[in-house]
Amino acid sequence: MVLERFALDYHQCRDLSKANRFAESAGCWRTVVTRIQNSDPLWLVPWLLDQVGQLSAKSQRWNEMNRAYGEALDRTQNADPNIAARLMHSWLTLIKTQLNAGLTTQQNLAPGSLKVANALEDLANLSTVNGDVALAEQYFRDALAIREHLSPGSLSVAQSLDQLGDLLRLRGKLEEAEDYFQRALQIQEKIAPDTDAVATSLYLLGITALLRGDFASAEHNYNSALSIDQKVEPEGTSVATVLTGLASVEAARRDLVKAEQLATHALAIREKKLAHESLPVSESLEQVVKSSLPGAT
Image (cartoon, rainbow, N blue to C red):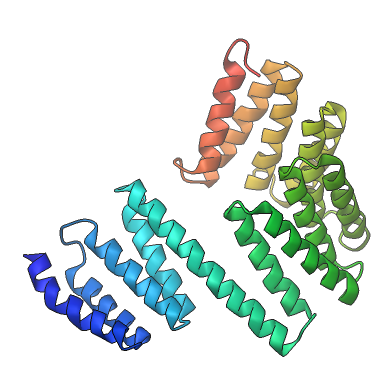
């Protein structure tokens, strides 16, 4: 019955799109969504919201595009993960279009400006999410070059150094990554000592040292980050993140008792601060379980 009533709406909204009246067509589909809400079949409303998102992108109404896909994913993530995955793919593709349009605008208005660097950073982050790490690295390098030219020794330069270093870490280039983290840390300790930025660089150095098998350096950097984070919020999520790093160090040393203690502490913090079904809580729970098993690593 719903599909029969939907037929007339379908032709009306489609005809607006065919006439290149994309914003109006998106509004037409949005009206249909409002009217039918939770009607069967379950795929119908997410499909409609996908249409709203695509047409909003064509008319560069980016906020409405993001709103539509956010609603669609809220409806499908638990009900139908396959549909949710397809929606996410479409959304990320359109976000790339949005960010490229923003970069072009900034390059035309103020080439080589800090706004261009910010747009490049956004594209780098999206490329990382999409798994295109080579492209992400180039975007980060371009953003860093602009910031070093316009504001050398600034926190924005340090941010770019950390971002580029973290990407290189993901690519297995640990020595180069460590060099970028150290450069970021030197800037941060000079102009913003004992801040979240310093703690972040120390944490990244800890991860890199652990990957290199340098457990002593990993522990030192993690503990340095922990001392800063605990001053800001003694039982905050940043503290939990560092505790998971320290637990990994102890697990690598085969000190499973200490590893379990640290992981349990991190889990307790995350369970207080985050939803129990969140990824960080799940990761902490897995770390606790592994630390408590004989022969765990």
